Image (cartoon, rainbow, N blue to C red; front, top):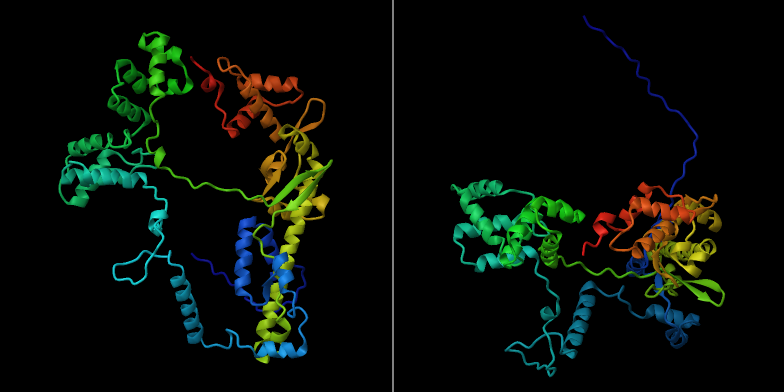
Length: 498
């Protein structure tokens, strides 16, 4: 039994009127530039300058004074003369490349410090302090490279070196073998070498690698890592071994009383072992984690002038663009009129977008001064609750615009360098009915912890009660959340056992 469904398909045209918000190219570019931090904005402006011949850079003050000659006030005859001067546009590609190569070679020969002298060279370098370029580069071998080098120069057998390569290749950045076990290594080695690899050989190779430099690398957990290091340094005794094998969680909580009771030893014995453990390295691969230093460039400065604060934009390195003065002469050429018109429009859009960005950031800075005056005068504990909507209404912009302005941008203030988002914080109710910024509460928690007795640190509940006495109503779980955000350990881990 079946059913037959018939549908009448009708094709028709309907005219409908509706409103839509369409982002123009100019608006898209303005939004894009608005959210760029200073160093990225400089790169973007330089790229646009290189691509658009209608853009020109304003010279420095000294350069403008030297350049203000007949170029600014060019007569009609001079304009015609300038148009007759051959430019790179009138040259053939071969001629231009040849000229560039000649210029590069001359500058190369003139500067004799560019390269070392080969045996057959007729040039001589008189600079005795010359350092080859490759020797000036800072090189940091990684953990894997360091271990593989030790593996190759070790006295291991060929099979052990092949197994060792698999083990080293599966270490995490801190030097632990956690993603894979030795049985998996055996199966992979057997499949790769197409011969049966005994598990005993894998375990033996693993033990040899664990005493490579740094000692403890290749361990499967923290206890194994510390035991290997203690044994290698001759520090391992029965008490230390039992503590590392059974009481790592109690060590983390500094629950030394339970350790002493379980091992039937005195607390003094536990303290002696703990001091030895603290000399060991829990993350053997840490020294090979080379992080590049991130330098922060403030996008604006808030400085105090007398009794008032002023906002100064940081435009150091940002080219000041203008329309090229040769625009009129280029526009008259029929063969390039359309091209020049498009480039002219893009140049104007770029200049306007940069001006709008700088103006919006400046107005945002003055709005922050208005709302956060106490912070600039007294410090972080006087930060008041502030939302994007407050600033948006103050500077007559949309909230999304303020969000883009504050994203990944920094400000230099008398209190230090801060991300602009730092000044926006939700409010926490006070007992008197007022509000305080959550960031200010975090600073108060940090201050309370810094001033506590290390032998008797404050618990989260105690900190909550201290804040309540100061008129701040914060629950214990909120204190715990803020403490975690500040990377402050719990009271049990902050306690000083000695």
